[in-house]
Amino acid sequence: MFNNNSVLNVLLSTILLMSVILNATACYIILLKVKKKEITHLFIASISFTNMLESVVGFIPQIVTSDKLLLERTPLCISSGFAVFCFAVTSITHLAILSSIRTAVIKYPFFYYETCKKVWFKTTLIIICYLYGFIWATFPLIGWSKYEVDLDKKRCSLDWKLTKSDSLSYFAAILVFCNIMPCLVISTMLYTSRKLISERKARKANQSQSHQESLDILENDYLKVCLFSAIAFFITWAPYAVIGILTIIKIVIPTQLVTAAAMFAKLSTITNVIINCFIIKSFKNQVFDLRFIKYIRSINKKVAKVHPKISISIS
Image 1 (cartoon, rainbow, N blue to C red):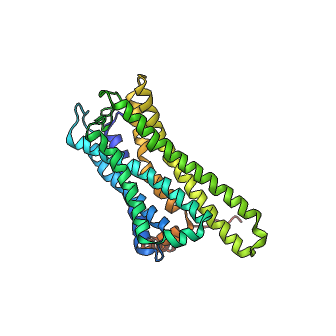
Image 2 (cartoon, one colour):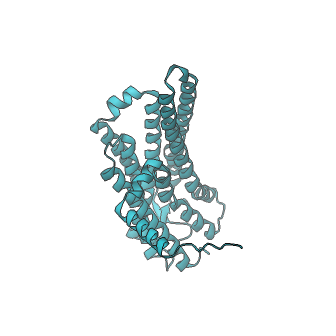
Image 3 (spheres, rainbow, N blue to C red):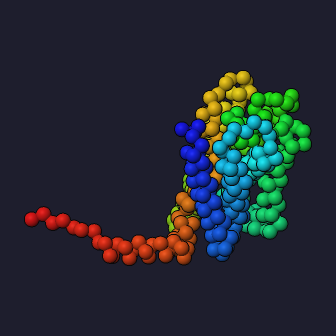
């Protein structure tokens, strides 16, 4: 199926459209509709902005060139590979720092309210995320490994075939600093948060029942969103990473599997925003409050009145 260029174009265009609409909606609501913006709001907006850029800059060149195989590295191909890798690392860095922030909310609430609300602190953390992704994506441009035509010759990616001698050391470095380390941070923060919530529940008799219930809901929401977003990111990128590792150890992978894994990885630009925004009740209420959504719902109501359901009575 993935050898059919028209089918591939439709899938890419669908993911691109959904990613742009969902992430743009999330940015609009968080930045313009949410009155009291916490640091978690800004991080989620930044993740949505990053995923939207990844979709536009990464997908469009592949859609444009999908009717032919890439036989050599072109400037457009390299730029696309750089953007996708840069924004992917930026996204996982966002998730790692965001999980730390959410743990700080639970463990050090006074530090959170005194420090994390300051503009310089918010700005610094977000800049660090983008800088971290930019630095790791820049190394192949300045000589440490390189961007090469991907295994299925449909896009530029990392040098999985090790055509350059130092590519293996680069892969080892990004495995540690862009995958294992963020994974350890997220896992540690999740464990710490879960443990803190359990301990706090054990002491709930010392607090009013209503206060404790609202606290439990807030903490469990933080924990659920952080857990699901991390799992979704790693699951969507895992097949492509596994294929890359198998290629490094000289195992031949069918090009159809490479294309399918790359397509699956692109779903991360949608899953991030769905988990961080659209599964949260307060955010969904903001979506339903948008004029366009209200207009669509009003049309549906009018249609329902004009064409009511026909009830069949059995005598």
